[in-house]
Length: 456
Image 1: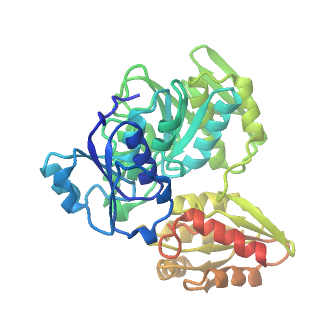
Image 2: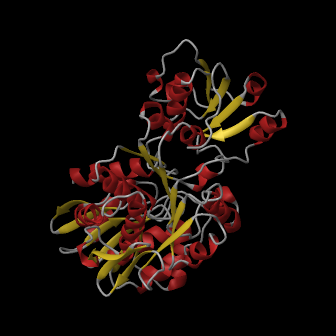
């Protein structure tokens, strides 16, 4: 736990009234603050606000936050608000502190914090670790970027409850004192460059999650990723790592077909790699990362083993929706960047029609196009969204020609994929892009995919 922000009788501006803003408001009220709740949208365009019913609340909807800064002691922003916003610079010039919802919630989390970051695999690893802790009989809150705000759990938790937090680079922009007792960095590949500007900034935000740790804390990193392996040297505390390619001094690795967990007290085999229920080499890495963290948090190895064998994965991540006319429809809407979709492509074992495209995050699609061309399983591509032409150009450059356009019509994309797929094939939604050009978020995109496929 970090030092809690003093809130009693303080006027706190909350900017961004979606899930994180609503949760922050509830925690602020519980701690005796007077929240001013702000969003550029009018109340009619927002949902869930009826959950906040308190005379201390002041509503400031449908207006920019600039004019409110002279009246507040603290500002809490949602992850969607860029830290580079002009009004935030104005707040700082007025000596008004600006923090994110993660920072606020974590400061009131009165129990051990385990945090997971990385470009890909965060949600799976977070959920898997939460299951390991729960199966060990611990009271655990699985929160953060996964969709459940930290502040909401912190407001309801009991002393000593554990928090497993999925942490995004957006959240780290406004979390100056956040400190996990054990943290994991899974991998780093280009993502969110439209917001962060360059890779150096993105990498620095990933590293920042560990910079407040002390000698009593632990880190888990991917030894096979040169960026993560090199990033955390010289920081205090205990280092563990996981690897599919080498034995690590402390952590988890493969020896033959077995996953080995090595700790200071010795090593033991957890299970065979093929016994891990969730498919793919990337999920083997996620499983080893979760095992390292669970062991650090005193989860017995038999419980880790059982969870690895039974955990079925998360929704919107290589999720089988339906088999229709001998074609399997797979929802990987969580594939919001190129690297994530590359991992999904690697798991395909039959010819596949893949749906690609979405919101532009200013990344290159050349590597994706080369992988599609190289894979014997990528039978056809259906393009959607704002990035369709960029992906088409990359595919043409790679010499891949089986490309079909659906524009911004999601139903057409699915119907086109159905017409192309033959019995025994897959239809895979793994867009390699964010969803904001056509949907509220990746979950909305995944739900729509399921709804349309189930109605076929």
